Image 1 (spheres, rainbow, N blue to C red):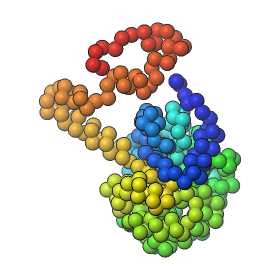
Image 2: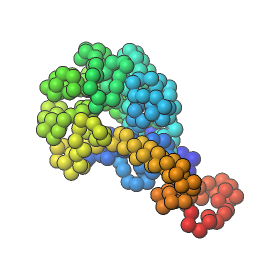
Image 3: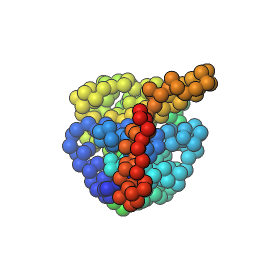
Image 4: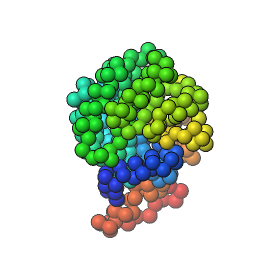
Length: 301
């Protein structure tokens, strides 16, 4: 009701403990704060905030146009409503190493459990598209060291994403990951791996928590959780899945209304009013004012 029942520090410690357990964490990407609440209610382990989703929500492509302040504001809205740890995509840190340092503190203040920084340059692009440009290893190390130095809560997770697989090859991506760990990264996000053999090679070479990005329509096969557990991965990420499902449903709904002149046939596919109110904890607000939830819902809603 109104807010979570846990503190950011508690959620950060819980996230660290979960990653240390060796268990695979399932992490869908939220499309708004309410969907983060639903991710928790459905029994997932953590919530992700995708830079691509946040950009799309603003009607922008994922090329680095969003700002650290916009991302932090949406992050704070999300962490307010879920007791799950929330990991955010902080792109390249929004500028030079000093900008990456400031970004860390903005995201700490927003109540997040951690963030990841990547080794692309601006204008950046989706990690599963060709034509990416990456920084030098030395520049990314500077970016990470700035982030580490700026961190005030040692439990705040700093993850490094490397996009080097599609540019320099698998061996170079592994070498970069090792350098990023040496620079202070707590975990690694190897982007756009091509198959199970590459996942296995990364796991054998790097001994910190690893994230598997299971984005649709990309270069990586959609491995199931059992396979990822056997490969020794720590996070199964579904970054844009909910946005794609939602926008597909919105498009279909609009076409149906335009064609049929009514939304009647769409009712079986809608979340009911009663389920929405349950998710919002509507009735609990009567603890403040008994007039808030003193009505009876119409039948079938």
